[in-house]
Length: 126
Image 1 (tube, rainbow, N blue to C red):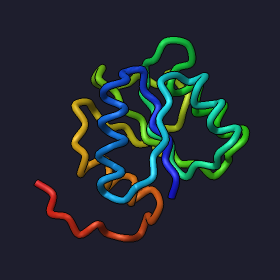
Image 2 (tube, one colour):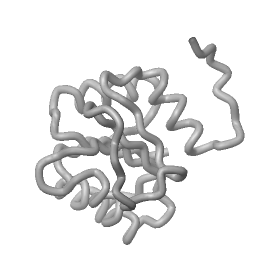
Image 3 (cartoon, rainbow, N blue to C red):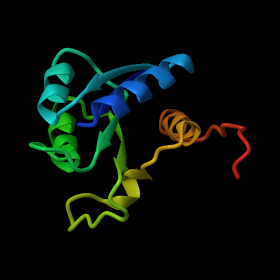
Image 4 (cartoon, rainbow, N blue to C red):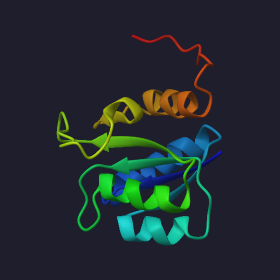
């Protein structure tokens, strides 16, 4: 499984990539939508973890562009801005939104659920 993490918060993104790596997950990082598109032109990703609000290309705009070249990619959106108003830009039933600060176990469970939708993680949820 190949993951791309896209967030303009460099320290946050690097920390997240290290934590995922420690759990055996392979994650590339990009600090802008433009950089993510460059990486996606060369690498096929199973999951994209996207910040909703970034300078330049927003998370939702990036989703549309990534889908053009990788129609099977799954998305997890991360936001530090509370509830997101989609304004009809996306079907919320098909997207997952997680709030910052991000719990690494929640992210990993969500990634696994996206890849294996009928498999339970077996982790105890609070």
